[in-house]
Length: 431
Image (cartoon, rainbow, N blue to C red):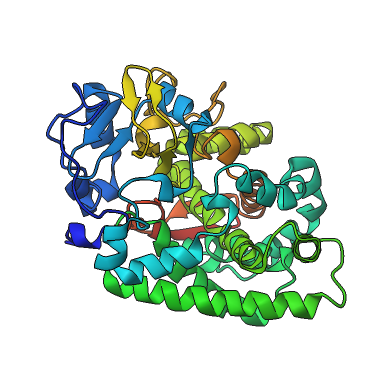
């Protein structure tokens, strides 16, 4: 198991007597918990137990506040007193001690830093504004036929009456191909871009091995070099899509080159949000056959069903915020320079916000989950993820009257930031 020297954002422990720690320590070893394979396969019993002790927990070894309550997380996610620039955290990768102790981590994050997901105002709004309008639901609708076409291609290739892996044959591929289309990237780059995204995804994890750091840095440099060449190639005929937005932002001085390259690479990599929704959502339906039958009988429930998939088995496990100025979160003071991490699985099953939270209900309303975060940093691609899932599940059910498990689902157990499946064995029948 990795030790604390491999936690990418930690330099050294914080004394337990700092502000805001009263009544928050219950002796929970979060680092052992968040890397335990059994927990990662099914985190909810542990998260429910910890949330019942208190909605906010302080970890004195790192100075991090772990937030498990729905109300508490909503306050911190929407507050402008907290942000996503982790350099604000006293013990971040950017600290002087960490620069000396772990120069490889510093270099990796320093190059990854200039993009909207890592920025606080006003830089966050400046960069996000380039793409935000295009990601609104009404503007995403223009891509509906493309999403249907890509879905049909994959469905046509699926085997019938024999087992196959839903993740490798469908869920991993569909959102990735949609991302390539949005950014005018040829299908010939499919496998290479997927490899870069997989390596870069480790940057969001709580713990990284030295090998993962090295792979992420190599991928970062190669991916950004490709994006730079691709932008240059598109400049002759930019069209009116995402590449034209990126080109205009650079030419008009809204973003510099590093910001432009990082933001484009980040948006392409956002396909992982949808692939976890497709895999986790399908497993939810198969493990709850009464709800699957209810959805088949009433497709008007598709929108609420997708929201319930997001709530019940969220693909995101942690959402961090760095505290810019002292912030009172209900009964707890988050001091400036500290870090707060929302544990999404606990937040999404808080009984104070969701009646019968451990029940999967495709007709659940209201369902005001916070899986995409909240406030200025709410996930920019949420409308695309929702639309893709609605199209995919509708077309799957239209094509195949019977969809059944053909083996045990295999959860990721090597990462703490995302919850998804390595494999999901299915069998499809047309009768």
